[in-house]
Length: 107
Image 1 (cartoon, rainbow, N blue to C red):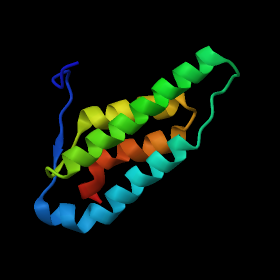
Image 2 (spheres, rainbow, N blue to C red):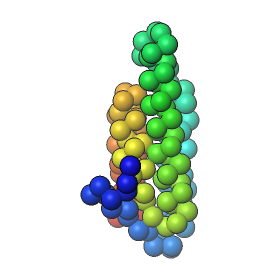
Image 3 (tube, one colour):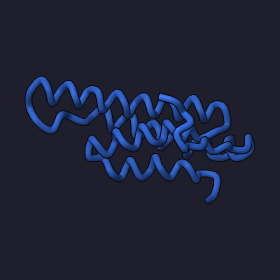
Image 4 (cartoon, rainbow, N blue to C red):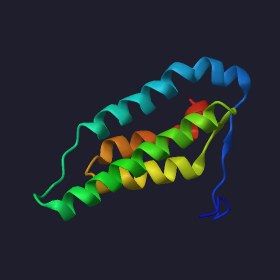
């Protein structure tokens, strides 16, 4: 999967990053914690396999966000990946919080 699929990382000024670091990390850490507490919606091996894969996608999206943040940017692919996985897990509110990170420096 390439990053250039119409996505655009959001560059963050170093001063903004320092000011917003706690807020950004709180969102990402909260997402990680809540995702890890989810359970498959149905019993069975197939449901467990898909659940594990979706949780993995959400956590990988979070890792992409953290890596981007360390480079003074909001990784758009990470936002997209995490939000999609969160919606698959039924965590719409968390998906919206992740998507709002795109405009974290506009507040």
